[in-house]
Amino acid sequence: MLRPSFNFAGAFVLLAVGFLGYFNVVIRVDPNAALSRFNTLIDSGAPARAVGHGERALAMQLKQGANKEDVAALKTRIAAAQIIKARYARASVLLEDALATNWAQGLDMRDRIRLENELGRAYILSNSIPEAVSIYASFLDHAGDAAAHIHIADNNSLAVFYAEFVTAVGDEFTEALDHTSIRNRDKRGRRAKLVTANHMASLGGFYSMREESTYAASSLLSIAYETRRMLLGGDHKDTVQLALILGPLYTRMGKLDEAEELYLEAFHAQEQVKGANNPDLSLYIRLLAGVYEQQGRLTEAQAMLVHMRNLFRDAFGEQRYEINQDSDRRADINRPVSQYFMLEPSYAPGDLVPASSYSIPTGKAPELDEMKLRLAADPDADPREANLPVRLAQLISSCRSETGEQISLRSGYRSYGTQHAVHQRNGNRGTVTPAGMSEHQTGLAADINISGRFMRQSDRTFQCFEENAFRFGFLLSYPPNNGYLPGEDSYEPWHWRYVGVQTAHLYREAGPYHKPQEFLAALPCYRERAANGIFPAAGMEDICLSRQADTTIAATSGDAPAMNDMATQDTARILNNGILTAQSRQ
Ligand SMILES: [Zn+2]
Image (cartoon, rainbow, N blue to C red):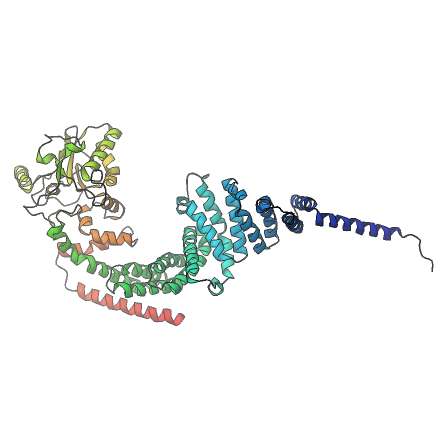
């Protein structure tokens, strides 16, 4: 058989194999060759093929004595390629190592955050959810205020930079949590589980503020809720707190049954802790009513709302007059004063000070009683700084520099006797209140003069007071159409009354518009309501005020209690049925 002495094709193949063999040997032993191959493939857009060379270069460098600082940068580049190859667990190991070096500490801040974000994503994609939520919860801590405000002016701030990374991984969280049951997989201890639940709660809260991240929010919050419910109990405040974020979210998503179940559980947990008639329960009842309304269960919704009002009335309405007429409250800086809350002739404040000692310009001789005000120092702040005259002086001085108008104190403290005499002189002509009904007797009220006459609504200082007085603890006691005073025109744009900074803020934010005395009378109710986050919508009856109308305008009509009893029974039935329904669903 004739055989060709030389096979050109065969020789070529042999050569090629030999060359490749040689080449592979080189990159196997020479880290630089492996590295350059890695770089070339990365640069030419073939990260998946590059990975092996990168890992080999890394291994050889380490074998030849390179330390973790030397290889940190390489590790981050290999990690990026591993993520593309979907080897997320390996990528996270590489990134963890790299981030734990001085090299990483020396990076530009934003570059380091980008790497941390890569690690976070690698964790999510490798189903290391506790590690991932820990990273993004720390991003939220750094984002601070930027996390709370979706529209923020300074788009280049580091806070926004952090917040944007958190926003960007919302969908990845949703997807990962969809096919991961962390509840069953998580074998860690109670403490570690609770830490993860905290991280999930803060991330879920963040996502819940963003419409596009609703699903991420509900996944994270529902796991956090379950964890807390199991480990802390359904009545623990941290569990309840989550129910209050998760419930509205479910409602928004149309998951009304889930929302109902959550609220019922929270309601009953609170009922156990606080008792059936506690006004705190009204929050859950209101939320339930909202769900029923959306489900078209209007009768049940109505019964809930009636029940809620009754709770508030029982808690605050009956007590309101007793509390406010209690003589111990006479010296309270937020005590109401009106024809319903009269001051006794003998009452005089014990901490009157001359306004002039606090740089308040006085319109009359500074030593007169009328030029005195209460000190009313804040109980837990520096009494030299946190008190009525200092704050009034600050308010006057800031408004003076804004308007250039000449502002002075026209009238401060007036004793019962003085008030009586002034009232006798003026009669019921609007501007003078009968003795016992005047806030001047408390030493907390200040009539303000502009250029030696009563301040008017048209004065620029009045606008300045309207906008700023609450920051210094003052409110306008006799707003237009108040009906407080016996005269024809009871509006007093010059009369400002100190209630303390906190109370003035609360009035501004949550008080009944232009009804300061009612607000002060029902202050415990407003405080409770604000603490529960209940702010009635426009046109809704103000629960904190409703009993007052009953007792002051007319005797309660005969059928009202019967109706209330009936409504309460209805509500009890609905709530009980609700538990049964919720239980049968489980
Ligand atoms: Zn006055």
